[in-house]
Image (cartoon, rainbow, N blue to C red; front, side, top):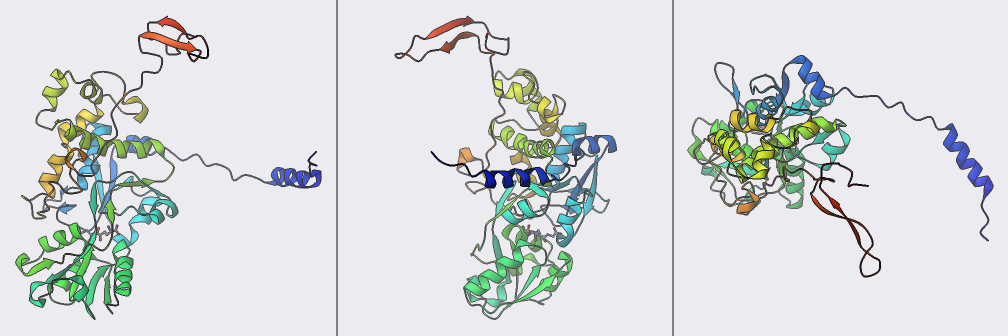
Length: 382
Ligand SMILES: N[C@@H](CCC(=O)N[C@@H](CS)C(=O)NCC(=O)O)C(=O)O
C-alpha cells in the first residue's frame, strides 16, 4: 500500500491555511458608470483620415469612431452621447487602464502582451491589417528590401517600432529609426523629406498619405512585414462591458451578412420572416437581457450607425481618401472569402422544444424511455 506522507500533507495544509488570499475588489460595472454619467467616454487618437477625423466644427467621424457610436446607440439609443478623448499612442493604454476612457477605438493592434499585461481586454477585430512602408516615388524603389541605410519615420508606443527593428535586423538593412510621439510631426517631417520612408499599418499609410499636400508623389511598397489585427479595447475583468462592445461590432457584421442596412432595417424588422432577424432586432426572444440593454439595442445600432459594409464604404472604401478596396480582401465578409465573421445571434431552447424528450437509456443497451413534452417548463419535465 502506498504510504501517505503525512508530514508533507501537514506542511501543505499548513501552507494552505496560512495563505491569505488577496481581497477581491469588486470592480464597478462600466455599464453602470456610463449610464449614470449619461455619456460614453471614447478614446481615439490624434486625428487620422479614415479612422478618426475631426471636422472644423469639432465633430469626430471615421471607421473607428463608428464603434463608439454603435455602443452609444446600443446603450442610450443616441450615437452622439459621446465624450471623445484624443490621446497619443504612447499613453493610450494607461488612459484606458486607469479608468479615464470607457472604450479605446483607434487602430490598435491586438497582441498577446497588450491583452495580458496591461489590464486590458481586446474585444474583437474591426480591421485586419499589416505593416508596410511608404516612400517618395522619386527614390525609385520597388521593394522595402532596398531601404538599406535609410532613415524611417516611426511613431513611438506602437507595434510599428519593434516590427521595424525586427525587419531591419532580419534583413540586415541598417535602418535608422526617427521616432516621434506626435503623429502630426511624424507626417510633416516625412512630407518635407526629413525621412526616406515612413512605416505604419498599411491602412495607416493610406491615412498619412491622405494628409499630404500632394498625394501623388508617394507610394506604398509591396511588402507587408507583420500582422496587425485592429480592434476596440476595454478594461480587463468587466465581462458584461466586453460583451457589449464586442457584440455591438458583431451586430454590424451580422446585419451586413443578413442584408440588413440602415436603409432597410425598419422594413426588415417589421416584415421579415427570418427568425434570426426577428431575434436580433428584438421582435422575438430576449437576446438583449444578458447584455443589460433594451430590446432595441441592435436595431438602434443599424438604424443610427449602419452595418459594417456601409461604414467600410463610407470611411475606408474606394470612394474615400483611404481608397482601400474591400472586395475579396481579408476585411470582406467570410461568405465572400474574407475574415469578417460574427458568431450567431441565436437563442438556445433549453427545455423549451415541444416534442418527445429522451429521458434515459441508450438503445440497444437499455430501454429508451421518452415522455411526451410540450415545452415551456424550462427544466425538461423531470
Ligand atoms: N496598430 C499599431 C499602430 C497604430 C498607429 O500608429 N496608428 C496610426 C494610424 S494613422 C497613427 O498614426 N495613429 C496616431 C494616433 O492614433 O494618435 C499599434 O496599435 O501600435
